[in-house]
Length: 200
Image (cartoon, rainbow, N blue to C red):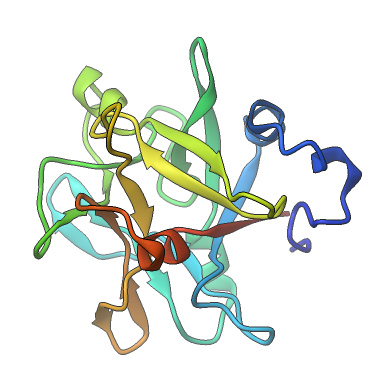
């Protein structure tokens, strides 16, 4: 596995051009690392465990413990372009998809606690509703060429951005929840919605 894809010293991202970042990601296998929760000695990866939310939905969590090959396999996303949208992407599970079926990360009409929405993996037939709810805007973290945020296109409005983020809510001892924030966006949310990109 390679190092973090781009760094602040990487000249190709000095401009902070989101369109260029999206172009570089599309068609590649990447991993997302929580900047807020990772340390110098441990990367906290988003991943797709073998845990079902329902018959057609899988869980998406953040792995808090030692990273082994199984986690690295389940944390791979394939980045897909959204037609005619230069700043938007979809994320597909590499581990669970097949040649005939793509499993998309998406933001369903399922609420978690308080002002939070679930973020899940769609395992069933892909229709227009799923394609809409699986669209995410890539936002560059100001002043940080190596950090991005992801915003739900389907649920955001002109006055409100709905960010994907890693809260201080555990699913189990070694797993953290991965959710979408529906409320007012404050500094804590902006910090927990920062992700680094890792590429093989």
